[in-house]
Image 1 (spheres, rainbow, N blue to C red):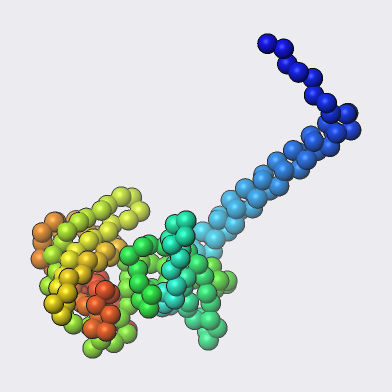
Image 2 (spheres, one colour):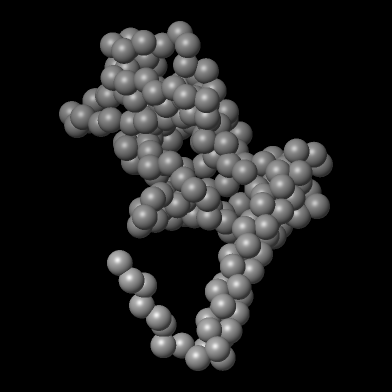
Length: 190
């Protein structure tokens, strides 16, 4: 098989090579920037941090799940978007850790939902239908009835060792939005 000669002039070849090199520099620079940004973010979240409450204000499911969050630090409102979990609902409150030196840098804790008013919730019984565990996540799935309707809910937990499928559990169900419920023992009331 004979390789055909290209029809490019030496100037055109040089320009093509320069464009390829330029693109490689851009991609390499972006990769280095992302690595440095992630290291700085992790460094800022490892020391000199504080906690506050964030609210889920939006969920985008296009090409994955992105949760839109709002939180306040010293009277200033911050908004962020994080790779999210599909089981959260708009309006839910969670504990969020932020950097005191740069409050825009934050990390939500999906295992720490927050209820501001316990009167908005009713104690019910649920049944465990699934347990998912890996190094990063422990997800409990349960079903429950509320006002003669069936619901299924997933929640993130810190520990899941004692629970098994078919276990009966005590849950808290939001009276005005019964799709929102939590395992009773995971709630922090503020």
